[in-house]
Length: 170
Image (cartoon, rainbow, N blue to C red; front, side, top):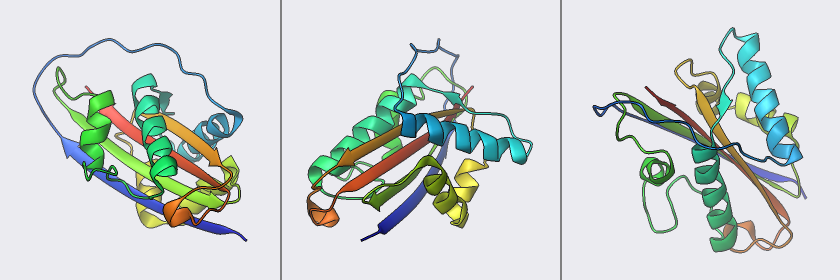
C-alpha cells in the first residue's frame, strides 16, 4: 500500500535587531542529504541560490518529525496547537535580526519515499513548489523519520515522515 500526504506553510515577520553567529555542523542521513541535494538542484535549474544547511532549522525539523511520529498526527502546528512558526522560532529565533521569515514543507509516505520522490511530490503541489523556489530563503533544515508501526493518523503503517524548514534571517 502506498499512501502519501503533503502540507506547506509560510510566515513572514520583521523584528528589529542585529545578526548572531551560525551554529555547529549537522549530520544528515542519506535520505536527508538527498533531499537537500535535490532541492538545491531544482533551485539551480531556476537560477536560485543553493540553501545552506542550518543546524537550528534541522533541530526544529527533527523535533517536529519525531513529535508527529510519536503522537500520531500530521500537521504544521504542534500537537499542543502551537503555530508552526512559533515552534520553529524556539530553535531559529527572530530576536537580534531585522528580518526573519520561515516556511515548512511536510510529507509522509507509506512505506517509504526517496529524496527524488519527495521533491517530485512537493513540486507537483503549488504551495510546496512555491516554498522550495522562494528566492528569499537562504537556509534549510531537514528531517526524515522512519517508523515501522506509526500510531494515530498513520494507522499502524510503516511510514517515512519528512520535514523541511526554510528560513532567512538578516
